[in-house]
Length: 255
Ligand SMILES: O=C(O)[C@@H](O)C(=O)CO
Ligand SMILES: [Mg+2]
Picture 1 (cartoon, helix red, strand yellow):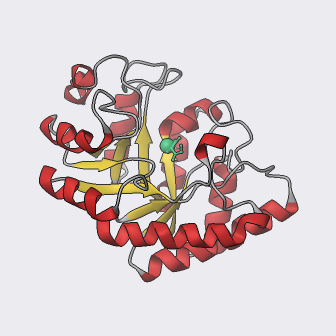
Picture 2: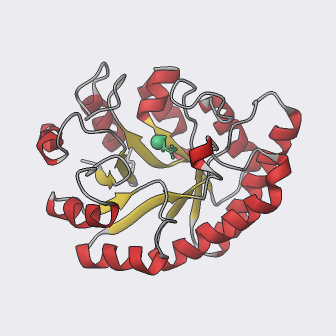
């Protein structure tokens, strides 16, 4: 059975963010992930983890102005300075919190824009170097265009191409099963082919992004395949509970 991390951005919404750590531990989780810790001091988050006896699996770099629709800075050439500061901020947080992985969002930009492509490639290399110097892995995640219209990295093959071309020892793929199923399907074959490049996985049912086992895909079959392929990383439970979070955790017993 894979190791699961509760995603505290989506799960345990019954509680204020700082209280979600204790709630996840009480529900049996031993690790957590979330999108962004930056509303709180890094030391405060580290304390919450330690109090709850949890490990951090991953969080994201600052994405720009989320409320205004920004979804990362990496592919935005005119934001390079801000992007580099965001890398520093994420690493500073990562050092205190003790995360093994950082996810770098690409931003809203056309994947066909040559300037965005160059900026993104440079940004990935820069962040992989900087995070690697601190012993933190960098991951990139293809995201489907229905949930995030206009997102630059909207294709798994392109993510694989970038990772393979850069061939950076500190750069890997975040494989979100939900996004893969929405974009292309063919989940098992993609996992088999991409496994050497994957260092983080996330799961949710399709199409509603609820608990695994409640959608069109046989999520338990997919989780067994991760075991069969020898996947050692965390599986982030990045789903919106259909009702109360703990009441919906029965799926974990079905594995
Ligand atoms: O799948 C997602 O949406 C997340 O993993 C993320 O990092 C950006 O929202
Ligand atoms: Mg995801």
